[in-house]
Length: 534
Image (cartoon, rainbow, N blue to C red):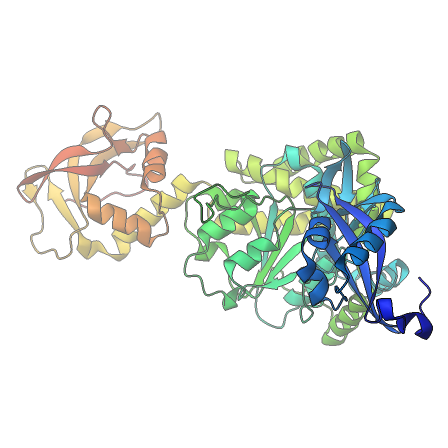
């Protein structure tokens, strides 16, 4: 529209010209929007995307934006005339993989292969140039394998969303270690593959653990291919983050009702989430097993080469970002069958390479396979010389360390915890011979360790005692150790034939201090614990 002083002095349009630029359909909801430029003067204007119904049915919207609505009928007619001359185009607020016109598309600042424009709030508009980003990565990131992994993790969000049906949730990676070791730089580099990595800017993919849980979830809602960061775990005010972390890794928020007691839409996602902190994330969660196969913890000694190297890297990616994940998405979409074959190849390889063997590792290996799959494909697309064997070694070593700290076998972890408590708090356990108590003075009794006839638990293990726990004390003990699901713990003991049961009951009748109660009775092999009844 050609504006000049004469037209703005026209008495019929003295306050404002309204220019309809685009007619947009939200690809998910089907709701129609208009992109309108409100001209306040020949050199000053405001752009707004407004629901079509608000423009035609709510004159307050136009008034608030400064339009002259003294002749509302003429104004609406002018808008309608302009709209009728426009073709319809798509807009989207979800990001990552979706479906449009029954075709799989990747939605970023624009979408591929069907064109659509992003109208959401997250800053994913590319900045600078792809060449600038690539140059920065080659010069300042590729010399360190840890930073290679950062790039791969950022890109892996695209693969996680693409392979959503093959996985059972998102990829959740926690990087921890001493301060000033480059963890935030690592996270920023990962985010730069997809959007604005500057943690001081608004609406970026970089979040903070000090943000509210609802805000952190909002960054993930309907995100199927863009990495998200939660920086600095030490800033988190939640005492127990187990449920939150489980939801993040599971790719689904809690179900909720609105004020009318109606079900609200439940946000879902399938992407890569990177957390950073000085301490272990799993150490702040309970020991109920679900997170152990959903979270990969990385403890890397050296991330950046030097403070100067880190600063040069950050400056480069703040100036150039948001190009790489779309390039990867196009490749995946055009090679779907090959991608899936590579995924299963890596899954089998990782299962074989990890020395820890149990069913939980099998589930974790799917997430780890996505990382390695991404590294292999990205190496070809971006001509970046990722050291594939060393990246896999970081991951495998991390899994081994994670199993040492938080055993994937929750039953093994539980048994070790119970043994440690008996040793470190022996004053809470009363030994009982077959014909009477060995000791008489015990305070704050947790259990009685009772001598019994020898019983074979399985082909290799024998027990000659029972640990008879007072039920309330047993449940308190489990909670104290982070084992908040009592039934799961009992089930793990049953699997090993360590829990003494009575028909369909998990509790059995036992006498403690002359009183018969229903208690939890556990038999452990003498090879693990051999109480001295002499």
